[in-house]
Image 1 (cartoon, protein in one colour):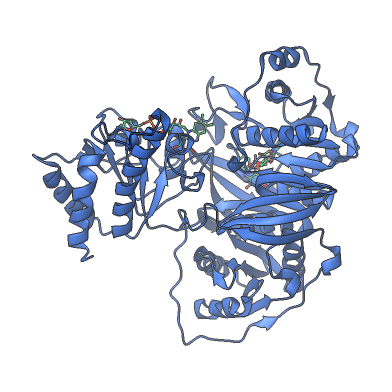
Image 2 (tube, rainbow over the protein chains, first blue to last red):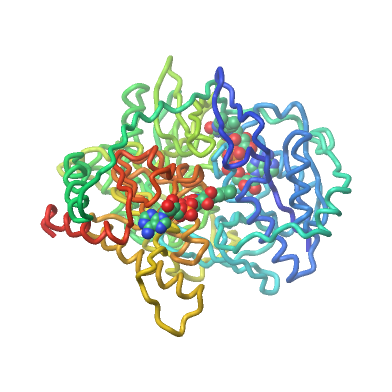
Length: 256
Length: 347
Ligand SMILES: Cc1cc2nc3c(=O)[nH]c(=O)nc-3n(C[C@H](O)[C@H](O)[C@H](O)COP(=O)(O)OP(=O)(O)OC[C@H]3O[C@@H](n4cnc5c(N)ncnc54)[C@H](O)[C@@H]3O)c2cc1C
Ligand SMILES: Cc1cc2nc3c(=O)[nH]c(=O)nc-3n(C[C@H](O)[C@H](O)[C@H](O)COP(=O)(O)OP(=O)(O)OC[C@H]3O[C@@H](n4cnc5c(N)ncnc54)[C@H](O)[C@@H]3O)c2cc1C
């Protein structure tokens, strides 16, 4: 069995991200493996342990993205591939999905492609579904449990109303929810192996495709209007008195 | 942009998700600026009545399909049908609510229709005939102004970002049934059932959210049952704290939220988590109890209208966002606060 995990490198969730002249900056905050993708790696490794599969982690990004791939290798993925091409500057989600689907096809004989729920920079939450659509594979999103029963997958997925239980034929695309369980930490051995790993880089020419034309642009990125809050600390002689005052204040806001 | 508008009404077992109607506001705004007719579409079991509800919010035509192959949501047959209708009706803009289903079908339609997708949009403008969609990115730390250069443009609107339009019950109509596109035999998945786990927590729709953090387990005056170990006792304490949180939420007609620390410590299920790796909410009133206000928590609640913080630590970062703050013990403040609202709201 062959498993692919698609991951993205993003600025750390605690980074101070600001727009300067319509462009995004995050100072010297570290770049990390997208937190949601840690769950995707975890799900892939759980399935790998049950099936003895091959796990390949892939990412579309710049040279620095090798670090995120190394984190996934250290967690236990078998090999990594970086897809990098200057022509992908400004790629929209559809373009990235097309590139990922081409890479998954080039890897060949892939049974399951795992994704995170969402990247914490672009915040789109669409790449798994779009890649699945390009591949023509079933899309199983927000999986909280994943089992392989014979030649079919049995998945519980989180929906607004609770959980939906779905059976699917292979191959399939799966995006993973946090309910899958805490991602494992990289092991000492894993870190050593990852630090020595030589990660191959594929260009669009290697994939045999041209740069897909982006259909969406984001000509401007701005800082949100400053939140003008004047904090009023409610004090009083007793909790009762504080509670009464606070309730009055909130009632005056007319939000109830 | 030219052409018509297709609004996807997300529903589950005959109930529209309330945010679906908000999408019609966005559609009306765009239709006024750009011209074109608005179509509404509902798919699945008992979808006819749902589709017909759209007439009261003003649509040219409501469409539905209750074919057995669409009884349960599955992305492939749903997408195939939405894409086909978009083509037949000359649709230039597809609009969806940002629900799990809406986001997914929108994404996949963009592949089918060679359109651009702009998810989780909070504001729309039309400038020189082009739609500019404002999307929070980097967990709301920034706003991107996105533009789609082709047709169709595919937009999902963020829950509560657009107001539900005024309904007019005198505008009624009969929805037109459309046929499914995919045969059951060509669909590679089967829905075998549903489980409740974590369901019924409707955080994103809630007008009021009362949230608890790690602080809810901090009450040395409580005596847990003697046979509990330390971890069990901590969870037991937290549950007493969340009971107070829940009582306040109930009186305010709101939902219960939580920080990741509370979820990770096993105090409350993940479905309640607010923040970067939980739900992004923007209620009119958000009351944070025993939550420090880490940046990842703020990412999920920063756009709430009125924020109230109850925290023992006067330096907790949450106070920087709060309109009202109480520096004190949540165990002391919450019971009289619940009582005070009960009186004022006549409950
Ligand atoms: C400010 C800004 C605004 C943008 N607005 C839009 C827009 O409105 N419409 C649009 O189409 N594009 C937009 N983009 C581009 C878009 O963010 C990227 O194309 C991106 O690759 C897909 O979106 P996402 O990062 O939000 O990923 P998501 O769809 O949230 O990612 C989901 C999962 O897909 C996988 N994945 C995502 N990216 C990669 C990758 N590069 N390599 C491997 N796996 C990956 C990961 O598993 C991830 O968890 C915008 C980009 C920026 C910087
Ligand atoms: C990648 C990533 C993603 C994350 N995603 C999220 C997310 O989605 N949501 C989220 O919430 N966090 C998230 N976090 C975690 C976040 O960084 C914080 O650790 C977390 O929010 C802290 O939760 P807390 O405020 O409940 O706990 P603490 O920070 O421990 O704060 C507890 C607070 O309770 C107060 N307190 C204690 N006792 C009482 C009492 N009796 N009465 C009143 N106040 C009291 C204390 O003064 C303190 O301020 C994420 C972190 C990372 C790295």
